[in-house]
Image 1 (tube, rainbow, N blue to C red):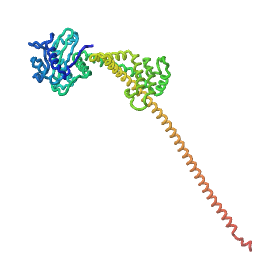
Image 2 (image 1 turned 90 degrees about the vertical axis):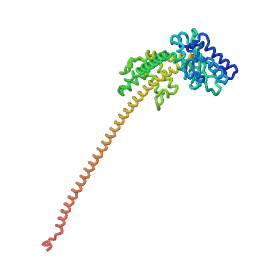
Image 3 (image 1 turned 60 degrees about the vertical axis):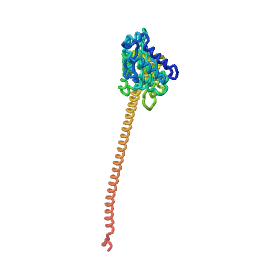
Length: 422
């Protein structure tokens, strides 16, 4: 871990001794032995004090003028923050901070960030600096203040101290930090790729026929704890633990909500724990996934240590990184659940369509039989009617003939035989 030290203190502006203490501190940092003096001067002082004519960053050669300015501002209750930034000798040599110009650039290029964390507008941010090339402890002192301070300023929140240290660390060790970020990003992408590849191993399951799928799920549910089956039906999942994971996923589905999005973030804590258990099983059984996971967590730890030495803060960031990868894996697991739902919905839909077709065919058959019966009855009815009409007609004809015959008979009977009568 790179060791950048940042310290800040101040003398309370309401105390009577504060102006003298501020001036003494200015004298100390600028004229102390091993201070890297301005060219042609017996002191080291650079910075920006626009009120005294030093409106741009650079050397300040009128020592007494700045000294009196600090004294008068202190008497007017302006708060002067006394700061120090230091490096180990090894880090200073490696990063070129054995040169005063590098320290000047550090403060100049980060002045806006320093001002922000101190609660001062950048246009009102004034400061004077001095570099000390002390053996084993190269460092820079600087005094900073708000040139337009109107209200009493006192302490700066501790969290802002940490942010200042982070900004300075990121600036000094930007190359090393970039390498860590590159390593982190690569490990993260590797992890995602390896997990997705494992998930793809079950894709053939969703390409088989409905009947094969039904048989597969029954076989999967019946596997014993040792998963002794080397191959389930015609689906070779390559790795024994992948089959076990599939069994866990089928068990998980019973507890998943029946409505709403299947997204890890929306799951209850109990379900998240179930999903995490499956994710950890993937981690435990796949070397590539486990290695990329470890590399990512280590990168997060190393990056965090750049800005904070606090173990609690490091642990918090590591936990967040672990949760991030578990969340990703959890969503991949839920994607399998979505595919299962889609497959089973499609099977139910197909089954329904088949039943519907059977019912419709039966209905059609019934209607055909019913129509055939109606036609048959109609034909029978018409045939009977025709026969009846024929019989009636025949009877009519027979009746007429009978009447004619009868008439003839009667006609014969009505005639008088006159000869016999006579």
